[in-house]
Length: 91
Image 1 (tube, rainbow, N blue to C red):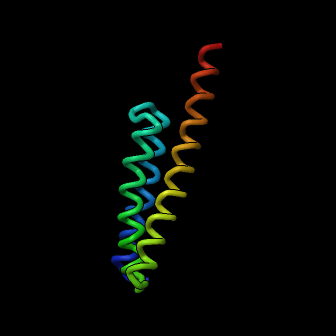
Image 2: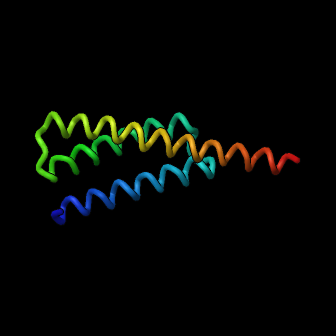
């Protein structure tokens, strides 16, 4: 794995963590978190796949599928825990 690949992998991890925290804290709505996060993660995973030596078509598929899946699961988890926290505070 090359240095650019590792940097892009770190950016991907940081974006997932940031989106989770922003949605969990209520700074972004789940819709905003999903849109912003998917856009960032698709681009980063596309570039990561290219830097790993994959063909452009495979990089596009990897970026779109990976970016959508990881980001939507992250936003869903953050939304779930945020709703539980709000419900617990209302009791």
